Amino acid sequence: MIKRVKRRYLHLKIESAVPVEEGELKDSVWNAVTKLFGEYGASKAALFFVKYDHERTEAVMRCSLKALEMVHASIASIVRIHDEPAAVHVLRVSGTIRALSRKSE
Image (cartoon, rainbow, N blue to C red):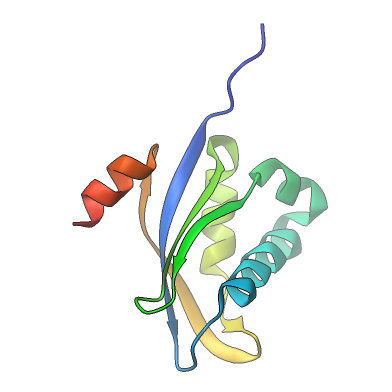
């Protein structure tokens, strides 16, 4: 029997003096995961960006439950995005997007 992959959704807040584009954020997160845990760790994380709100500088991304701690540590290690000082904070973690949006209100 094949087990279902359990996922978690992370609500992120990006703090930067300069506007951050979605692609730059994706690259920064992927680079942080590969730098700390290598290619194998990045593949286990199964990262997927669900949405990005440019005006509020917030994002929602999905990862596997088994790699949640790895992804959380990697996000905490981000100090620069596109050669500019920046910080990315995980505001909330949830099992569904619906519950995540409910918690955000």
